Length: 615
Image 1 (cartoon, rainbow, N blue to C red):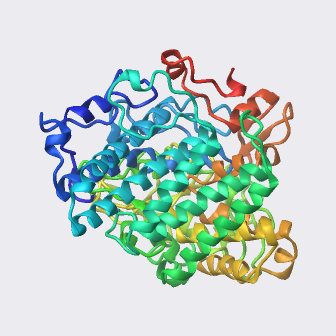
Image 2: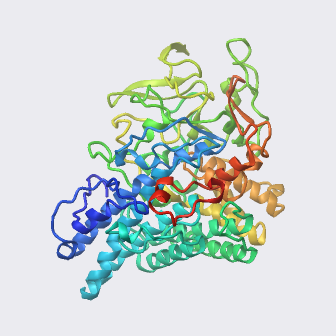
């Protein structure tokens, strides 16, 4: 899938299907694929090569529904997504995310494009599935086995699309075959989420049975699909445990939750124990430079650069082609500022994340940072624990330096693929001359930041690739996430377990943190808090937090009850920046738990019933 544009050779049938992405959506070919042959599908499809080309096309068309999930972190409390760099009409640039609202509230009516693109991904996977099923009976034994591998991957892709659909919209129509004409979808109704979940699990079960233990970068293998099935089961358990009242067709069941937690744990345990997998660099913290320098960065930082592509921790990924392929990732553009290839800093850490990073000396939280304005307080840069004093960030979890930059932290500036040297970040000092230690620098230009921090995670600390030309393989599921999901699943049914505690400690070790203290594992509640803490700092910027808050029914816990005073997001200087959930109605909270079915889908097909909070 890397280093080339896999345009799929499709015939008339798929050309029609490409016009049918949503339920009856037939105005635009959102698959962004141009047929390269006029032959009927039945004539063209003959060999494994044909099937592989089609599968690669499915991967390429589904990737833009998942490889910018970091925007979703803006719907939670520790990341700000001030917009997107996506361009309407260009699938490669992430059109599925275009127009979405990534603020902590009021977001769920703006994902019509994501809905359509996910159904487009389903249709693309179905194209592969239908045609392999058509030619499979005529294949010899060897060829049939290879076709079944491809079929397993296509079913995994279909399951992945449907998992995201039900996570956002609950009940959705289920398309089990390629859509070739409007009449095939105009009468469809929404399938209950339990039935869609069962179909997802059936697809994943087939894939687990057929796929190999290892595969080339970007191709699905057994451990990644097992992890995905475990995640589907974990979400199913969460919905049954915590409820989903906004989905009026769904009735939570405590027994179903317990069974799903146990089934999820079994899948996660298999991933952890049966395939010889380890965390990146065996979970070692690696080296860390002194405050303000970045010649040596911890292993956790390097995990999110192209040098880590193919590492065993990345269980399920979407690859990108890199420079000159028109299939590069946009991480630099979205996570860094103008000093780095003219990037736009669409995504940045909020001030409040800093206090989540624990001390390597105690393994627990440090005293809260004190916000000070250095332009009005002469002692702000030297006061102990001041948020603008670099010394306040000493002895923190290694993932802190790997993930965010605070005042006087540096990274490599870049213009026209060439390094401009070290570029210090100093909040509210955009592209200004500054002398540090007798050396002149130009400060980091990050006009998109309003917190006092910018991301280091995902930002390449070397020149040679443009802001949109990265070749990082975006992780949909990582082994560290599996460790934490296993701990969550076992804790939900049996409380803190020794093997789960050990796994959480392995993740903490990569931050050079000591093991959890006894009080952090003394009860199921305490251990859940420890698991959530690790999910926050380990997975920040990977698109997990907003989905966690919804499945745990935790929006009120984070932002307060309806019609409350709201919560301010502030900066390192102590200034209020944005206030969320002030006087927010119960209805808006309900809408934030479930997404709106696109109105145009209902206009074309009135049998599609709208979700309750949106009626």
